[in-house]
Length: 198
Ligand code: GDP
Image (cartoon, rainbow, N blue to C red):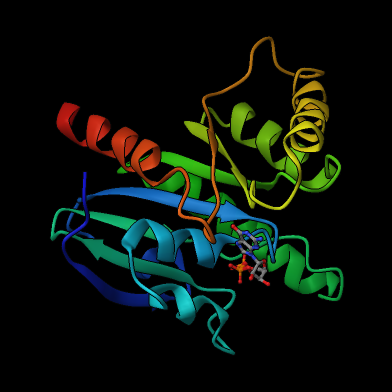
């Protein structure tokens, strides 16, 4: 699938103000700095479509992009900012919980994990929470261009071992690089497949 049109719909401060048109939506979420903006730009083949999620005041919002007038790509606020206050972290948790539990038209969450760093507790905790809430999700390893093949495989294996401490099997996984445009067809292929079944 190729994306033809991308419109930034709006940046919503709360779930109750999100679109009510019932179009399918796909959420993108991960730790801050995981490469989410780069991935969204890569998927949309645009240079700076996801810049809004880095705009002051919008980083904690739900950013909606209407794709081909058919479905939404939803850029969710990143987690794991070391410097944010406890109160902000609570607000983030409430909003994300609200989002995943209320958006029945959210068909798949793409959880981004940096393939270059050791397994992070907040990534694993988040995946486990999605599982407990029965939210459909897949894993997207980001920045796979950074490490040498052997190092990359070994790091991803470590992440997978952490996941398998809780899960019987691994969820669907995608290997991507926003920089080198790797993984676009695979991710958009999954979205297309789901859209066709709806
Ligand atoms: P966000 O905070 O999750 O939206 O992350 P960004 O997309 O802004 O990227 C964070 C940093 O990682 C930036 O310095 C990017 O240049 C870098 N980065 C993002 N994606 C890639 C990638 O695929 N490969 C490499 N080598 N660097 C990346």
